[in-house]
Length: 447
Image 1 (cartoon, rainbow, N blue to C red):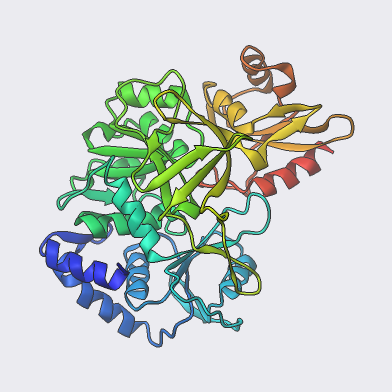
Image 2: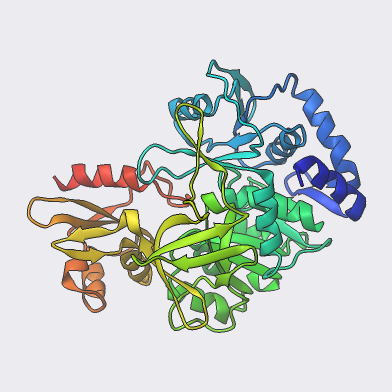
């Protein structure tokens, strides 16, 4: 099924149910109105052509409408972060073969090589933690397969409203659009002028996706998360104390694990009623196969996988082996209940004097320290040991208390050599962290 047939079928099946709800202006578009509304968006946008639609816009009603309208017309969509420097936005647009960039209030034409991207629905950029960001190409069928499997753990139906609280340039934002369209639920678009915690009480919202830093902030703000049907949390390590506080507060919490290359979710927990003795990401969702390789790497197979990664020459490079498995570069294990326990990223692992250090483990422990808002651990070069960990931390804490806290919980070799303040160049509320940028900063600061 493609977006055109999905939108038209949803219009027929869900009729008067609300498809789009804009909290900033109170606008609502019902499913039966959606196809005609999107065709007007296409006409107003002028000449569409067939090149990818690149957007560099914050989350908004207009942004959602533009992406849906482009998909309705069969055009690939490639949203990028509006926070990126202008030169990087231009680089990404040229890389995918776009003929222009839609900003929040303008359209900028550019010259770039034309790409033949047949049967590509979305181009989502990776975070670029191990080099320049690359575009991962999905057919719409992979997003629809993701939605079908996700329905197993967290059902959606007309009358439900999922707040679009994650960016549209992340696969988690795009996947939400498809989930709601396929189920008749409402895509609720937040009011950018209003704090997130102040919007949770809105009765239009029944479901919410968050990363760990957002969940912790909402808990501190005493946002009424317990009134929701489901809160889906993922995007990185989740500390046990945050999970425990959420459950004790009555939050209907589900933890999840996924990646850009799998159109979002791979595993998801049932609603947690108690904090697991060891935090896990749940069992594989329907339509996914999961295994742990002999080296400990998590591998996935199924209809949710990306078609490939776009190379600089405009070709799509497959991400699977001959048997259809893709390696996630995450290290993990399965417990006796077939639930996935993640140990860390293979490409983030720090080998120091022959010892393996998983930065995610150190980050999770430091997140338990009272006063810590966010922490990131990276490895820097060392003349004798090869590499050593350093930490960037923001919050009301002192270095010695952090060292003492870690000293009671990890091996001495895993304690960071330096604790640096969080850099102004990286917003602390970003869902994804550019670890390569942090590593470059740490190398400079340490040496």
